Length: 236
Image (cartoon, rainbow, N blue to C red; front, side, top):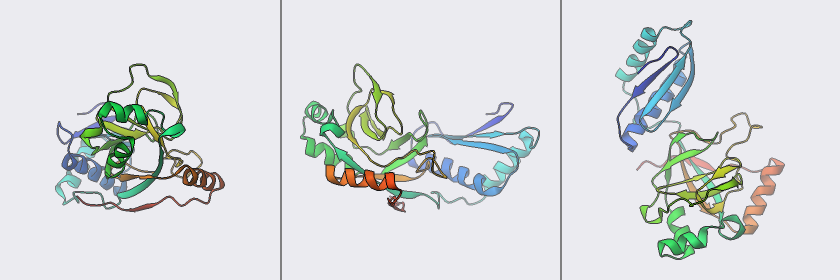
């Protein structure tokens, strides 16, 4: 699929780890290729959109470059993907919908926290808001419908469940997801060299923390002394 300034490479029509791994592998290869004229790479669940300057590189030349990369043996999963640990304080003022959501699901709040935090989530794509990660892998037993009346303002760092998905609000915004916790980690910060903490193809795990731990981490972030915890991504 092409336009005057963008080209899309489509790998499939369903959400799967294998297809998304190919999307992110091509994106990583193009980042490292040094091809002049590429201005932006936008990975999604099943495709990669490549924006380019037609005055610098023609679409036919760009297609040949891409096909050359695809013919090579690309790693199924990005070499650069990492597993991020995201501390979350659940319930109370940090997650005002936790109790009601647990009741709706017929489980205890503690069990909801356990099921939400025991999963390693894959970041399929970024969108909606800068730094908003679309995550795959949530336990289907904790899927819950969105609120009937969306909130006008959800604070940055809020962790919510909406349907079959869970995620972190990177900045204050309206939203209808059920809020079960809050992270002190600034997943989007314009003061950093890389404003968005993670990338598509990375993984993350939510780590339950107490209110005291939350406030301590928050102070460390504000003072610039916090170390963001990451590791090599776990292969499944």
